[in-house]
Image 1 (cartoon, rainbow, N blue to C red):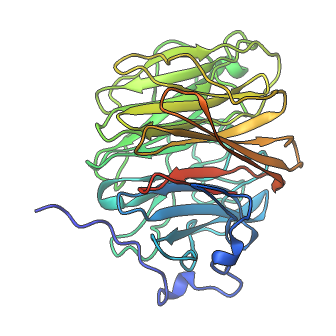
Image 2 (cartoon, rainbow, N blue to C red):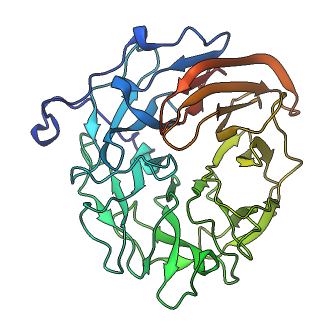
Length: 400
């Protein structure tokens, strides 16, 4: 017998999470007119920022977003079922108020769907977050939806022997109960500077009930760009992928791809796009399944790119960028539909304490741009970015 999908129900009676002042659900009136054809653009509920979405096999969109003080705020969860014109009532994700951070854009929550569509969330903790990191500094926090599908379990810190959390952590999960939370930080005996930073992975084999202590993803040292984000994905075959920005020699900040074919026991790593810069670009990345493959998206020198990851190899095909000039394009989000098409979504003109514009382009299965593209002037708020999912009908939903 096949297991039933994990039922995340609209919260109506769970008293600890029904609090005065919680955001209200978004309805059809909050859809942007900028969307056209198969592309729908939605606003994050109640003015939230940094949306991160995943879509399940039934077409239910699962969404988390940030609200509150950018330095000490909260994460909320909603879902939206096919045919409905509004998101569900919001549920607070973090059990300790003020545990989430939005400042810098790349340290916010990330979401993954695991076994029976269970929701897994990881995020960088704040100075006031509990539990504390015993090794010092901010904690790497994790929670999952509870067995009843009505709330989230108390948050946990997964940093047991690393410190100096900075750039955003990430989470991935598969249908067999494996969960991966990854971040870059510093081991106790690490050298100073960004060269002393490494990617670490904490693994769970029981749907996130317990995690083994974090381990370095690679034996060799590549460093890690201190304030750049990370992204991980476990595909339907159970292979694990992760992206992070290295800091070799302090200036070689290449986008680096990690792959694992044995469920995170071992990772291979390789540079997939070079960038020499003596500064931290505060960049983010994205991963998505497209057809039978996985696509990666990232930023280099103010331009956004995507590329198909070559199966069974730690490399990518030739990177593709959207038409038009670069220079101020950041925070790419990627998704692929059942027809093998890819959509790339990004922000333009954003910066520290500065919002910008939203843009997107659809590409055919050969990587050529189609006529489906769009833009929303001022569509990205301060500390904001966008997310995108591919719907079962072949269309795309962008949430900004």
